[in-house]
Image 1 (tube, rainbow, N blue to C red):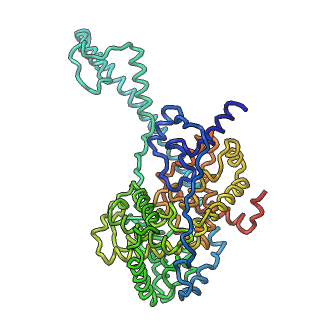
Image 2: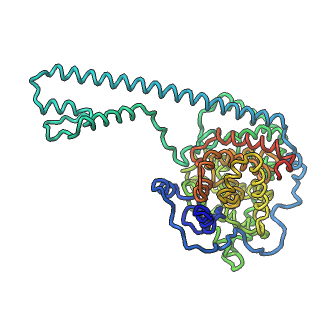
Image 3: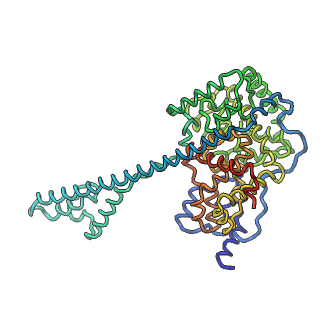
Length: 547
């Protein structure tokens, strides 16, 4: 076997031990690679030192069964007929038209941007050349005016002044010493620097939480205002048409109506407007009844391991967003996750479920505030509002997990099946990417486990997750089935970057740290449109993506 082959085998054997880069292929319970570490690796041009070869310990992200009991949501709830109505398929023509429009508009915007950039670059180059020529002419005129009576010191200082940032040099000893060749080189470098387009400012991870109806109150376009009116009219009726609400929501939900829309689409609230308030009161009282009944048992021997793991994981949840580092918010998350784990002993708490609370919590906070959320102090809210947010987040997270609970039961069979289906699907839609992964012995489970376990929440900014979930809530079996096609579209989206990597470790670093920090609603809309096209082609003909 060649050295390259040995190296690939070595990295694969030690994938679970390499510090920082690919530590634990079951990475859902660990934050992504530190960006600073990644940058240092690239700058240095080397790789982290390998650990001592050895067989890695098999990782697990589930717990042993505690006992066999029924799950949380009551079978006897009286919303079954409404949920059945909500599960009807979307109008195929409407969604396909939306998908095609999104992709077409995105292509046009990219073309216009390229043309604008080219024109701007050419204009800046012409302007800079004119400026340089004018400066040269002015220098020649100054020297001609000074004549032969100019002392050597002053003459030298005048010639050097463009490179001394306008500082007056009084004597030759203070002036920079260099050959005419060096001065010419520096002048040329300055010319190139002026000719380059300005780099866009770096946007922090949470700075664009206000991106397009996710937070804050940005100015709405005429189209956005029209869509908001449609939502309000639909929600104002005595009985909300859930099918029509799904169609509207597929392309994104305005921030102002997102809380009520999510509650309706998840099945938490009934379509009948008169019943909503009574249902809310009943479910909120029921949740806090669970708190009184179960929460004091968190330190009991039977449950202390579960609570300890939850307590450890909560601070890791979106660590860059100050909202989630507040003690009161972390206490709310601890209660939600512990009660869910106690009421679902078939799976118990699994690392990664803590991420799934955050989108609901943020969206339901918006029912009570108008300002930005990432730095909002929740202690300024009234106690009743906080209790409502907590209970609503619990029930909606529970409804989500009811549809994907096999992802978190013993051996996590749901995730195993989805990762296998993803591999088969990618092998059909982009054979080059699939063969490249095989060539460097990258297993899909090593990166896609986290994609399924955390629903891409570790790969996308929170603002993008909220937009993604608008469509998941609108799409039948969005979290359990449509998510597969989103993952496939997401992987193929990075085909150029993937094909450029030529070793196992480089591929793993890329796939666990995809550059989505600056993504917004436009990128998510294109991703969803591509995913829907894949679903349209393959969902009803699964044998098409099986070899």
